[in-house]
Image 1 (tube, rainbow over the protein chains, first blue to last red):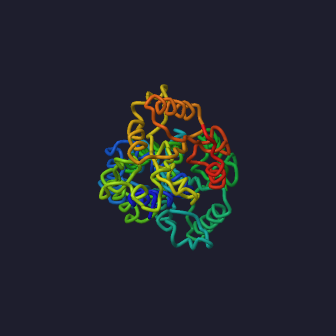
Image 2 (image 1 turned 135 degrees about the vertical axis):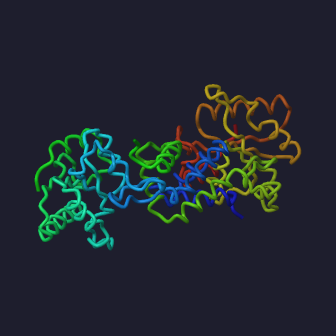
Image 3 (image 1 turned 45 degrees about the vertical axis):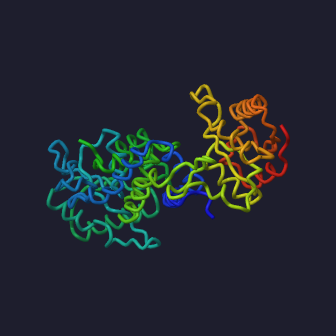
Length: 203
Length: 203
């Protein structure tokens, strides 16, 4: 005999799959959702139902875009410089950088960093597309806005090597060491990110 | 121009409505959901969509039950004593008490505690139904398993007074002061709850 109705137990189980959410927190979230109106729950359900189908990856920058769009508006925007490209790991990193209001270039999402332990090799990242972009758009500067982790470092070195071998000349910079090592870009506060953007150093 | 696609921003906004979830955490949850398969998101959507319609409140104990049930199985179970009733604030408190495995009585959910600041008066709680149940089921003992807060205290006193005025004779006990004051029942660990159950004191 279960103590809670199945619907509620299912919800708790599914919520506890979210990263960092244990069974207690999931219980609290589930009860919170239950206490709010049924419309709120239905609205959230609708958003989740349509989430994957209403999003796609920009074929140019690999940022997340509406499935109705062709190319990320952050790329097509005429104000933004296509000759200045910030290379980020994840689409959410774009949000963090945009919040600083200091970057007027375009973005390129790698889709991760090289991490053999997680089975991510260079071939899974959007590196070839980046090199093509550097040639096509005559990119002047590449800002490596990737996390200051061991994997981020090796990805940066790999990319530098790859560009040398492809005989592509481009200035490569990386975010200033204002970023505390070990902290994900996603969690960095805006001021730290501002410092890191303006104090970027040549690789 | 928004940085993130609308579907993702909607999801982040809706997730940040969960209690204790800020915009950063909501972003992390949303990306986590996005990274998992579309089926997982659809499954969660389905659970949320049906949540309110597949649950109802037991008319006898006010616990949450499947909408297909008539009365909570915790009440109808012949092994459980209807003469011993644990009075709890919220349906989730039943889960905590059941986990101790020490309680063989039935439950009555008040639906909150008296709290004028939140606009909750005695008339919003299932107090009259409790008095009716005490008479109908010839309840011997009422265990007040409500939070050890100021509101919980005043609710206990109010209930005691109400029973005296209604000339209903019933032994009223409350959970032992093993519960640290200020900690919600929902968060108490099982051992503390076991001590609190076995060491209950007469009011």
